[in-house]
Structure formats: structure tokens, C-alpha cells
Amino acid sequence: ENVNVVWDKIFGGIGWDETNTILQTEDGSYVVFGFVQSKNKGREDGWIAKLDENGEIIWDKAFGGSQNDEVFSGIKTEDGGYAVCGFTESKGAGGYDAWIAKLDENGEIVWDKAFGGIEAEVANSIIQTGDGGYVLAGYTWSEGAGREDAWVIKLDENGEMVWDKTFGGSDEDVARCIIQAEDGGYVLAGYTESKGAGRYDAWVIKLDEEGNVE
Image 1 (cartoon, one colour):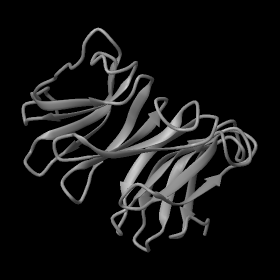
Image 2: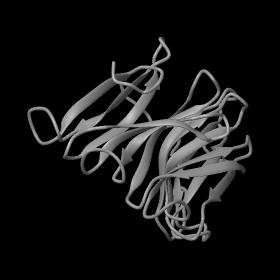
Image 3: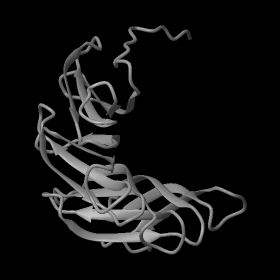
């Protein structure tokens, strides 16, 4: 069966502008998340755009500081707003820090938090948990056993850290995605260089509610 293009849209300016996640909302519109250089708030800034059913922009917002701030994933939250994650250079302890920003239904920042040490930390995936908090999954260079280690952070509804856990060995181990399981625990997916048959191997970890490997 042939697949026909209904519409396609390009958004951006003269800089590097990229979308990384898209979701459809209850009213049939779309929300895209990514980062932009063309809004002139900083070098790279987090970006959210609300599109109508035909792909036309209803509104868009850029957010961040004077350095690189990138969004890799975004979700719709229980209150009708959004939450995004990625990394920030504009705040935090040094280098890249894992970044979460809570946005209202119009894309305005309610709060944002950075987590990390003096090395690089990135949040690749975000979920809202059954208790109204959030979980981030990504990697850290500042903690753990080796180079990049998979990193999971549990936050409360205000973005305050409840706990964090690292997983991995002496080589590169990265979490790409996380879900909450029916039993209240979590399942983490990514890749590992520290174990397995080759250089990079697919990696899945089941965690309990406190982030411990089951």
C-alpha cells in the first residue's frame, strides 16, 4: 500500500534547529520538543512548539541560558503542562548537567533543575511517575564505576531529588529510555560496553521502586 505525504513542515532559522520528540494531544494537535540556535537566547536553547492538526505553529517557546541547553525528550504531564529533559551548560556544577524543566500548558517554565558534578551528565528520557514525581534516565561521568555510567534519578513533583542510582562497569554504559512497570518499579533500556559479546551491546535492566536491580 502506498504511503502518501499529507503535509511536511520545516521550522527554523539560520542556526542549528532540531526536534527530538513529538506527541499528539487530546485536541488533535501536536507538540514537538528539541533545541534551537535561531532564537538568539543563547548558543543552543531548549525548544517546545505547539502545532495545529495541519502542522502550523500555534505557539513556540525557547528557554535556556547563555550556553548550550538541549532538550532530548518531552512528555505531557498530569496537570496539562509538559516536562522536558536533556542537558544544560548554563547552570549546574560544571560541563553538561542533566536538566529537567517543568512547563505550563503554554510552554512557560514553572521550574527547572540541573543535576551533576564537574564532568558531563545528560538526561535522555523522562517519565512522570504514579506519585506525581518524575524519573530521568541518561548517563553520568561524575559518578559510578567507569566512563559513562547509566544514571537514573527519581524526583518529587517539585523536581527535588529523592534518589539516584548508577549502573555500569569500566567502559561506556548509557541509558536511553525508561518506563514505569506495572509493579511500580522501572525498566531501563540502553547499551553497554562493559559487558556482553561485542563493543556495544543492547542492555535492559529491571529496577524496583527504589532503583535497585532486581
